[in-house]
Length: 162
Image 1 (cartoon, rainbow, N blue to C red):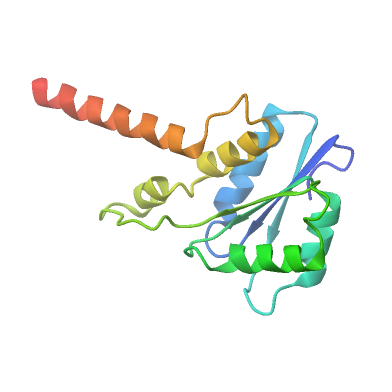
Image 2: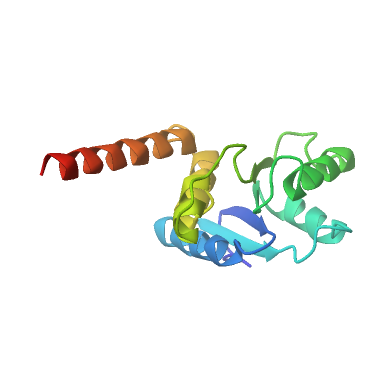
């Protein structure tokens, strides 16, 4: 669990192999903001949903981020469906954001590079959470990805010229 006495409490609910990256993102977020407490929960299984855990995370946090290696329509969508049906989203106090694999072809590469391209590494998780907490101060994942692509293109161009 995140810092007990934190002024702002948020949660990352991970399923699958992104748990280590979720923990790394949580550490980064807490290091950068002493008022922030980040709880990281391991869902361990998709079905049946652990509704007690979901209710606890929804009640105790202002932001809930789900992270998975699945696609649209997976675990994060099941969580959203439950929270909506349970009334956890009715008053607008809880922001929920699923992070999933994009609906796009990802080139063959090292696994870490593929997760980078998919936006599912620690820096992407931390950036998404920071954006939800303060949208005016933090760029969107699309903006970060576009910057990374420009940097890659620039490096390739420089290597070609050299």
